[in-house]
Amino acid sequence: QVQLVESGGGSVQAGGSLRLSCVASEYIGPKHCWGWFRQAPGKEREGVAGTYAGGNKTYYADSVKGRFTVSQDSAKNTAYLEMTSVQIEDTAMYYCAATSPCGSWLSSRLRYVHEYTYWGQGTQVTVSS
Image 1 (tube, rainbow, N blue to C red):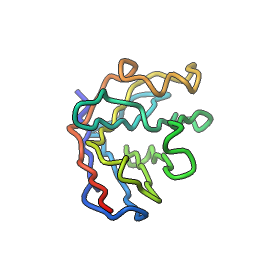
Image 2 (spheres, rainbow, N blue to C red; image 1 turned 90 degrees about the vertical axis):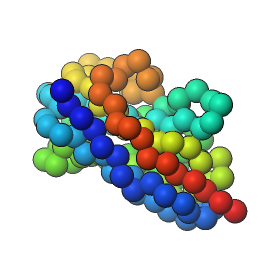
Image 3 (cartoon, rainbow, N blue to C red; image 1 turned 45 degrees about the vertical axis):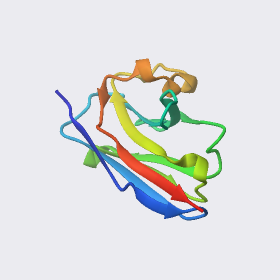
Image 4 (cartoon, rainbow, N blue to C red; image 1 turned 60 degrees about the horizontal axis):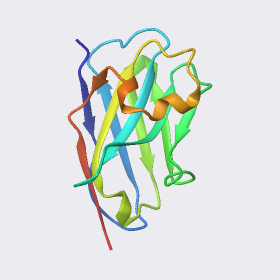
């Protein structure tokens, strides 16, 4: 069973940056996808960003476009979420997820919680003014 471990969360002032990492315990599988999700208290988990390891599919929520960048390194079984110009509204628990195979997906599928098989435990991001 693949295990995912997130790191890099913490407290940051509005306008600052954070880089989240997610390491998989083993090879996820061919044509795999990574997703980043977040959940604020009292709200549903929402898709923030996603990417296909094959390189031609990405997804970003409208609220983070131009500020967040998702990337992955297959050799390291690792995904990243670079967060810049963070806003108070970005405060949430951030989760990474992964699944395989997903090579035939449209990019829009990367946003959905139910599409992913493996999940991390989450890392808290708190943005203050």
